[in-house]
Image 1 (cartoon, rainbow, N blue to C red):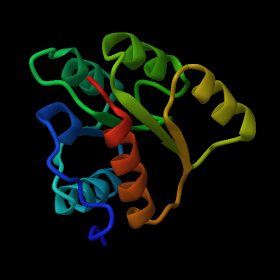
Image 2: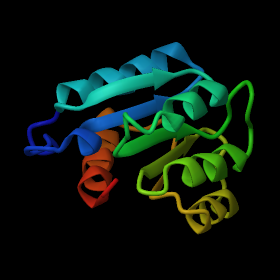
Image 3: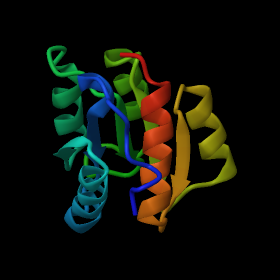
Image 4: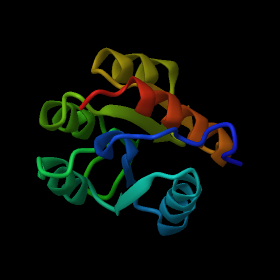
Length: 137
């Protein structure tokens, strides 16, 4: 799946990806696909955990893959918070409840990309690679 999407000589921050989703199987699937592409993946199941990970300045992320609806966050406020904590990090928002308006607002808030669930893992890996290459943390 990753032969074309494999990252080439990433620096530490570009190669670190935070995957935030409250559904363990989805989170694990994305993490495994990205790990197979050569990324170091950290997982978080809540908005609070995502904020804690992003706040750790000694361990920057190149990309955050963020679910819109989490047990402790179901709007774009978490995206806003993560953008302020990690302004150099690219954020890809994913949701099963997306509309054109939500996607437009997410992009206005600085989201790098917007993906509707379900999606192909290979497409997510390609988008993360694109975002990672564009990211300068």
